[in-house]
Length: 328
Image 1 (cartoon, rainbow, N blue to C red):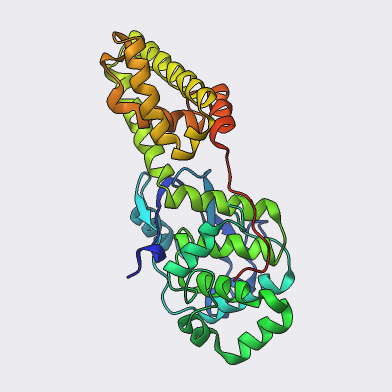
Image 2 (image 1 turned 180 degrees about the vertical axis):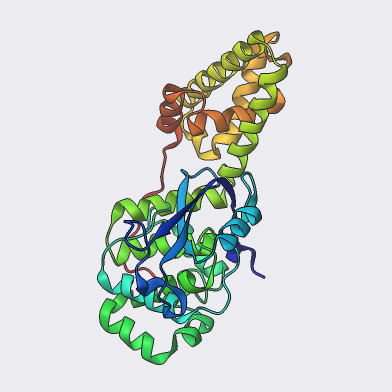
């Protein structure tokens, strides 16, 4: 299976609360959502708090009709359990109806990350087989799934951007919502269709984090710091902080002497700067040369403090330039 269509994050169960509710209670479910149209007088409400990757915690809410079902759910999903987002099976009619209703409303929905004009989204959709090629039209797989009638509806509703809506509908119904292909399609959908630059930008940023493995490196850095906190000393932490400060300062000095050096990328500039730092202060850099890229990541993500992050952005920027609408 194409790796760009796979889920990339694990969801961790943080808490589960169960409440027995009776007809007349404010939290009792409406009859319309009871499975099979049954009329019942009691139910068990389940609130599941979970966190996906480094995103904020969320709450999933559902009802079951027996206490045994509720307790079984809690047993199957203990606190701390890791769950990988499942690959959707054949889309259900209710899922198709939901996504089409939301899209027809024109109201922005969902949250993830990005900038819809970035070539990254076009690249991902092409490589994932959603489009025939990078910047190309939708693939035959997407066209066959939607069918001629639905494609005609999309063309009538969205004009020249109908293929953006088509890609989003296909990905929403068929792919995990943490897959790079889905996030790329969502970024473009909100950029071209809802014209919500905030959501488009948010999805784009999420896509960049996924593809460039920023989140993976952040989690690794967090784990490293936790281990260091148990065995490391205050002196070690101070030395690390000093090396990061010297690193960004030397990178600025190199860029001031030769502005074109930034074109070689942050990693290359950081490695060159670290060598200069080691020459200037060899006792400080007897350790740390092998961690230069890790230091750079901490500066880039703001973990070394907002001041260093802003200085990094001043050197290398924070987002690509926008492209013209209508490409592809």
